[in-house]
Amino acid sequence: DAGVIQSPRHEVTEMGQEVTLRCKPISGHDYLFWYRQTMMRGLELLIYFNNNVPIDDSGMPEDRFSAKMPNASFSTLKIQPSEPRDSAVYFCASSSLRTGGIDYGYTFGSGTRLTVV
Amino acid sequence: EDKVVQSPLSLVVHEGDTVTLNCSYEVTNFRSLLWYKQEKKAPTFLFMLTSSGIEKKSGRLSSILDKKELFSILNITATQTGDSAVYLCAVRLSGSARQLTFGSGTQLTVLP
Image 1 (tube, rainbow over the protein chains, first blue to last red):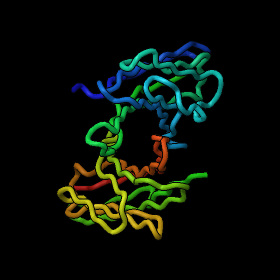
Image 2: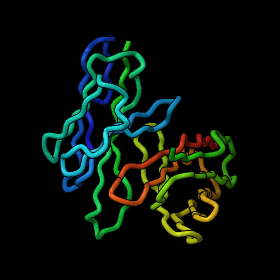
Image 3: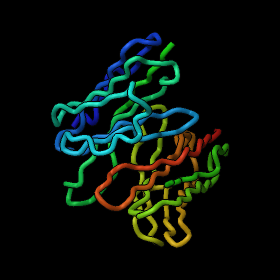
Image 4: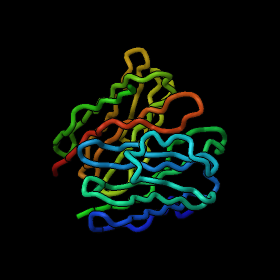
């Protein structure tokens, strides 16, 4: 298994532009999470999905952020318009309880480092 | 508000030293506590702890949970430069929610 795949690895954009981050979870995992990591705030949960349905988006900072999961193998996180304070590393993670009913935690993707100038 | 606090924030040791990293939590409906190691990329899973007093061990790393005092420790013996990383503690709550609440991490630097 290739693990959780995120793209792009790095993104540099100008303030005001739309940014789309992409994630492919591990096949068979039924939970998908988007996290943001900054030096100031650490790892923060933005939103998570179960079976492609958004369950909790209370961590989404504001209306400029939106996330979708059109199918079990793909999710996007969009920021429109982007601002310099959105600069962070954005991680996608997937998880499943189906492995013998034992929770081994998440598998994280390698992250997208976003810089908004 | 659920809270996970790690200490120290950073630690510098020499190879061969033993280190203890701390994680305390104040959450409702605790289910499990997880430790992750983060080098330059994504956090990688180390341990999951659900029961008090039962040590989890993997090589030179070990961890234990105290659900009465609401904390966990991660021990690393005979440290190596490859142990240099940020160590993250996270708590998962019971119920249908699956998200993790992370601490701010401990930056460990092991000098040769």
